[in-house]
Structure formats: structure tokens, C-alpha cells
Length: 170
Image (cartoon, rainbow, N blue to C red; front, side, top):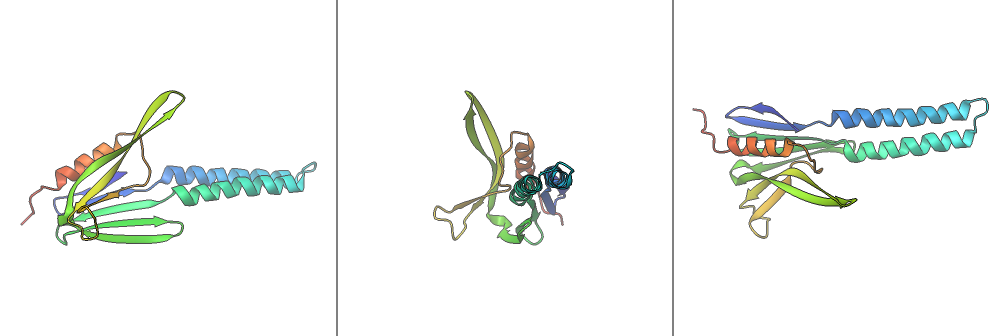
């Protein structure tokens, strides 16, 4: 997740998962290519090659559809809106919220335990207050669906929280 623009009028945060997209594309191509090589080889088993390429490529395509999602959040002071744009293989979604409802950005965390070792993961979340649809007067919108153990969530939360009280430019 990166800050694309940070001016007093506008802040844009974007998550473009290029690395995972490229890696999954290579995964798909390797499995399909290996399946074709096995199916067309001299001693190759045609059905094994088709099954190998089909299953490996299919798993890669499913992972690509599940994990490669572009997210862009635009905090726009002149229009008074927060625009959240999400794009995946299945389509495009955009939602707007009033900027005045944004209280702050906080860090959600989850802890998992594997092999006797605890691992804590984090993600930044928008906290909107005074939302009419919220039962307790507060709505939480995760900026990204996935949790991470890097410093990105803290950096994003700190940047947005420091941008919020900035004075409007005349």
C-alpha cells in the first residue's frame, strides 16, 4: 500500500498487488506449460499432462481471482468525500462516504498460533462516525482485506490521521 498523493486538498492511497499478480501468472504458465510438455512428449501420458496442467493452472487462476485486487482510496477535501474504489477480475466497485464522518484510521490486528509461535498481523481500517446505517453510530471499513506483518498499516494510519486535521488551503 502506497501513498500516491499527499497534498492539503487531497490524499490518495493505492494498493496495486503487482508482485503477487506476476508471481501467480508465472505459476499458471509453468503448470500449463509443463502439462503441455508432458502431454505431447514421446513417452508422455496425455491424460496426466492434461490433468497436471489443468489442475495446476486452475489453482493458479483461482488464486489470481481471489488475491489480485486493486484498491484506491481518495480523501478529497474540496468535495468533502472519501471514495473507495476496488477492482478485481470480476469487476469494479466504487463507494463514497462523507469526509466529515471519518473519525480516524486505526489498526486492526489478529493473532494466530502455529507450531507454538504467535504471529500478529495488522491492517488499516477507516472509522466512520455518525453513519445512519450503523447500529452503534460507528462503521469500520478495512482499507484492504488482507492482514500483513509489515510496517505499511502503521505508516498509512499515521499519514491519514495526520492529514485529517490539516487546515484548508484558501
